[in-house]
Image (cartoon, rainbow over all chains, first blue to last red; front, top):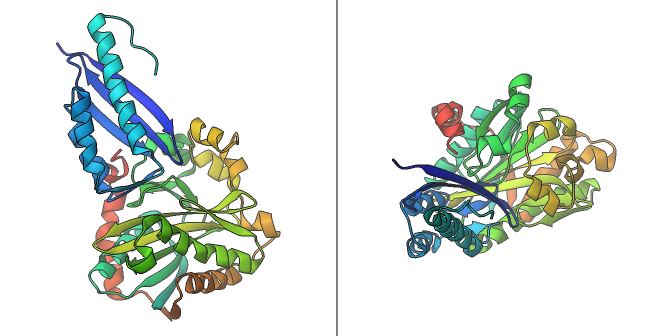
Length: 106
Length: 251
């Protein structure tokens, strides 16, 4: 049976972004929502990004997913930092789930 | 450029106002209406949240329910806003994305300078605070948000002249991280109204100043007009979207 782990992280840039990520024991992103008071043009680039991140289980997959924003304008959020935060959530939690340790605090 | 101005201040509910803003963007992008500035009010008082916000992170649901304050999601990003019928005038403008308006940040600066000119004209030392705010003495008095479709933009925003800041503070939720980064403990400490700055304000003068301010900011020659039957029909077709819990709780 797959158990899921939910992680929420609030990030403060010029605007605020919140990551809500659900991870599976198989070290994959089951679900992700990027919310906050930032701006993105076009707006649906964020939804496309979320959709591409779902199912990712590696840094490479997430990096590739973020290429979805290459033609977009995102205001108020450091997109590179956001990407690194998603990757570190995945890597840290998966490392701990494999070793059986408690999940590290971010 | 010529700018059509619609003074639509009798006030309608939040679903209608958001539907009409979207309808005007769609109709402008199809070439069915000219570039237009609309000044309006929300009646009854209401809350709008930004396109990317989660309802539970942006508003105090319990308080809104208790007070019967309606709310919906905007098609524009940014944060949650409390719209006070007797304390706030909202503007919306639909324009082609061309020239200096092509760059998103610059377009915010240009359009928000309409508010800056208006406020300065009334005696308040307003300044643009990127990305989307106008501040007086460092406190926010206006926030704006923009979306773009098919080469056209819609920007709408607030001007708080006598907003009940106690209700605003209880209706909206600001993340602790946001308040800390602004060096304040509460939303209340971060915002102001024209009444607080000038001691009093005449709404008619404010509206006049806004029209003049936007004309200057957009280097436009303005003319006054009414909403057409077609615009009203287009808005009424979109109202249900803004009432739909699926849209409101999209995130």
